[in-house]
Length: 359
Ligand code: PMV
Image 1: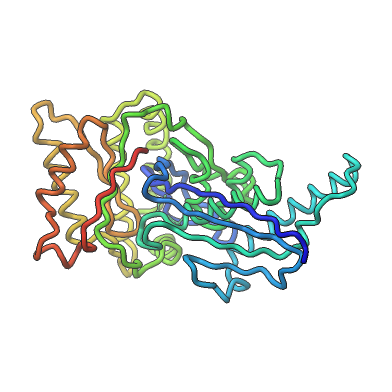
Image 2: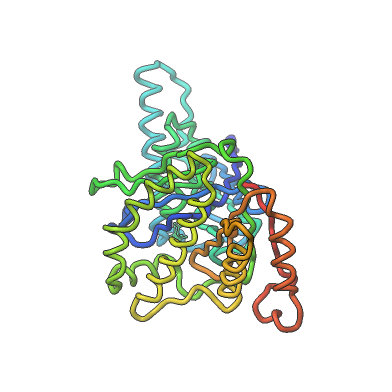
């Protein structure tokens, strides 16, 4: 028996405040616009990946949440991440042998891998499971292969697994710069500010439904690219300005601006879904009720200050951004309107889950 090499890594989820929706290159996963997200703490939502490498493994295998995926050869995105990191490992081994004269280099690039990946939250329910999952895969690969590579460089590999995954490699506030090159060499994630920059910012995750969504983001966004006329307007006239304003709001810890852009961008993303032909519906009645409750909450205080901001990805679950002093009030509000009783049982997973996550 040869030695088994092993690495385990965990990765967080990120929730976009300026949404990525649309690819200009579906193979390399190059987006039609830049996007920006907040990485959540790993207390409630996390992916965990263990990779083992051994000369004795007959083939590379993958288990997702304990179930083996027996068709990984057809999973192009996974294969892209594996072949890209393996190529870098091979180069690194050659460099070690040649330049550094190390003769006992472990030929890990030639070994098959056993990959186990799990999420501690519902997969594919619009809670960014593919983002944390592929970020975790790319990071674990870089660790087991001991790749001398920067996080931004690694983000270009994670991006090829799932676009939004590139942003989960950093904590705090992260931009995915769309880039302009056809080969994707400048389509990468960069950190705008670290997690310590805005300690008062909190994210409340309202799990409205934990069932798998009907339209995957991959299928949905390309239908939007092919049929929506609103998308062009968004790409050219909306997102570039919003990216600038959002980065400024984050640097200045300006919750008013942050909240306004977050809600406007979530609204526009779901408007794009409606503008897709045939339309895509990710929000349900509970999601819309949450929008109404937060809007009412923001307009009911005497100074009419924005105290909370909702955002929804490709699913009905809400993420509410707020600042620490408002958290008890918002939890009470949600509990009052959505007590998880007979009338709401259709919508909520039972029991209704509300996570209060530090950002
Ligand atoms: O990375 P994907 O293919 O799961 O797409 C994610 C798209 C949204 O979550 C809706 C927006 C975003 O920027 O995360």
